[in-house]
Length: 194
Image (cartoon, rainbow, N blue to C red; front, side, top):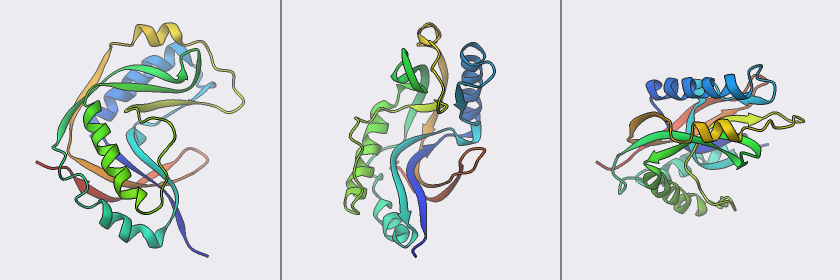
C-alpha cells in the first residue's frame, strides 16, 4: 500500500500578521460566537492562504511535484498584501465559512493560483469548480449546527484593516488531521521573482 499525505499549495504569513488576524477573529468571535459552539475557529499558527488543495497525494509523487513547482512562481514578483474586511461563504445569511479578505494583493494571489494550476494539472490534479477568491479562513461552521445571523457584524467590519505583509514565497504543505484540528508542516518552499 502506498503512503499518502494530505497536501495543499499555500502562502504562509509571518507571525506578526497571523497575530493581527487572530485579534480580528477574536473580535468577531466575541460578537458572533462567544462560547465557540457554532464555529470552529482557526488557531493563529494555522492561518494561511490556500492556492490549491490537492487532497491525499502519493508521497512518491512529492519529488516530481516539488520539482515542477520549483521556478513556477519566478516570473511573479514579490508583492504586498493587505488583509481587510470579512465575509462568509456561501453568504453572510448562510455562513459555512467566515473569512478575511484582501484589499491589496488579490491580483498577485490570482497569478500564484494560476501558476500552481499550470503545474498541478500536468500531474492530473483537477482545479476546483468554484472560482478562486483570495481569502483567509477564520472559522468553519461546526457540523450539525445552525448558523447564526452574522450579517450585521460582517457589514460593520467590512472595511476594517487587519494588517499587511510582503509575499515572497509559496509553500507545499502537508496537513495531518487530528481531533483537536489539523497540524500543518511545510514540505517545500518556492521563491517568487525579485
